[in-house]
Image 1 (cartoon, rainbow, N blue to C red):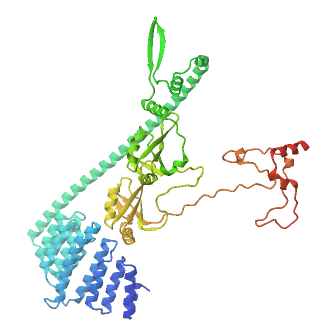
Image 2 (cartoon, one colour; image 1 turned 135 degrees about the vertical axis):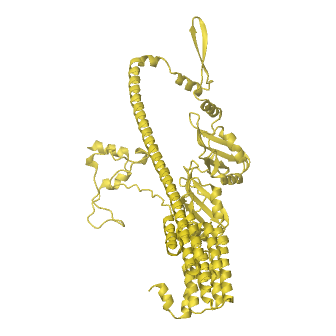
Length: 613
């Protein structure tokens, strides 16, 4: 049965009201339940004070859309209208109805618009209802005209249906003069369907107007339609120009791609010809090149031996001695290489792991990392030394070790994790020997359900932390906000927002889920990361009768598929007794010395077996 129909047919007052009371208590954000509750209370003759109190509770329930507030106000105003006896010129109920209309307009303009950035009533439905009540039931057309003037000034003057609604009200309860005035204003202001409004004006003048009224109407409608047609032609020309520009841009992009493709193909062909020519030159002049050491090799040898990077070559030209300086290819690499050569190699002392932190994900282009990182970590405590790691060429490898004097300084330094350093998030983790503890991993954030924390996805990459924080603060107190980035510091469109309590987080989910931020529709949910599956270590199964060979003989990846077994096939005997899961299988068991002794045999035993053959 339809719920609305059951509400109307069920006559048990206590049952109906108790069901509605529980419904709005469990789902207070659903405006439909509150609307049915108010109607049920009116249907069963509940006291006016109790209905008003229920309506006030509905306003404070926290609906998720601005239009929900318009709906609940409309239901309550309809209830108040049904209480008024319009046969009397003035009554207490009528004054209450008018005051509630005024309060509804102020509430939508202030409270709702401030919360949702919109009033929820763009067509002014409540104001139209008030105007109809004043015109039809109170015979107060002056108040109705004032209300319609206010409706038109709120951006509705460009719509033909709004003017026709006002015209029909004047037609039914006003006079011809105000009808004509309304249609003249409609002809000048309407932009969506001006032809329809012009036709209504001409129809009225043909039926009731004089010749002068007809002439004025013809002149106004022709002038307006000519202007509208001109504006439409200009808009069509502008649209056609935009389409043509887009086609030209697409053609230009296509042409540029074709040129780049041809240039790339040409370079590829040229490079192949050049490599072929170089190979021929190498074959022709190979012996001469072997006798002359290359300049690059001499520079590398000079760096390795600690000699100065500037080389001097002496040659005699016409009895004179000429000195030629050979500069290094890159000053930056030379500086880094000299820094690496000057720095003594320090063996890692595992006993100092408690006072040492491991810093990674640093920019490879960082010059003098020790000098730049020292002020950052000295804020946590006294730094004994900073050991940056360089490659054999002298390039910084993006990570280092920071040793403190006290353990509490190292613990405080862990709070610098994910701090932005030269555009990248710096990773700071405890110094742990992975050879002794290979499964050690550090993740500073919770991976379980947190009802006071939100997970937001679908954010635009240009959204900053401050912009998102301003949006989230409107729904509660934000304790922490974290934008998720990749290792390069680029945003991934994800964020975690921590609120002060669970109720604020749940309200924020209802109001922010589906919100549009910079043309991106975001998704908001309670933070509950999925469980990560731990990869199971594969068990090494050895066939019965096969020798136990150490893993080192096969390398780090184990035995390859194409690797040949060096054991003769005559010695490869399979056990006839298959092993069940919980013990030996029932059946004749064939036990051989090979099956029992194979796991303990060594290379010398295999050699003896071969010699017996």
